[in-house]
Length: 233
Image 1 (cartoon, one colour):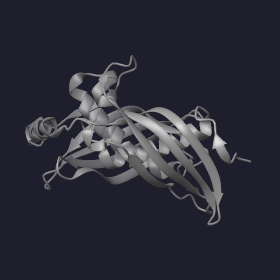
Image 2 (image 1 turned 120 degrees about the horizontal axis):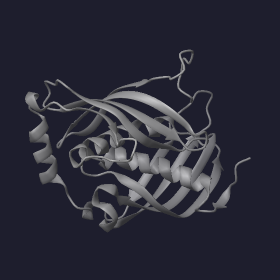
Image 3 (image 1 turned 90 degrees about the horizontal axis):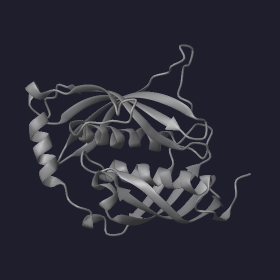
Image 4 (image 1 turned 135 degrees about the vertical axis):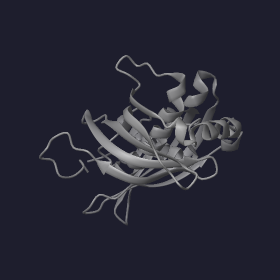
């Protein structure tokens, strides 16, 4: 039976719920030059709700990974509800972050990146970001961040009280043709579920532009076992 009341902020239940809130934050505010990582859970509690499910109340801080260690910490609070239903349902997240607009704006970088890669002769194709030694070229970092933001849509949707997802690697990225003035990118990403230590592979098609942000248009779970027929959840 899962605990209710105040939770130890450093323990798995609090961290897992905060990770879900982080996925939600990245789906709304991530870009090729901004992706948030969990810094610390300061306070957490859990309660059962009459409608069926468990709600976590969280106070935590995040940092913008694109800014490195010099970036400011952002304080956030969230309510994360894990529904209890016969079929898996995505968690419901209500998120509030202080001073979100004070995080460095990246409009000029985003526009330059967009103009560089929107032309047909600059189509990008790459594999293993980062490589097996943890190396990633500076040129590939915005594409890794875009993949991390796009993967957040999947990680948010697939999360439950028994999972804790993070993106382990971008197995491949291939730029696609687009007639909508959007960067169109096909990613294959490897997602690591910490509790089970399982690596799950997903293929996704995502679009991005400075004015419309990241959108995930298609997702496809890719089983490594030929007999598997559905995602773990």
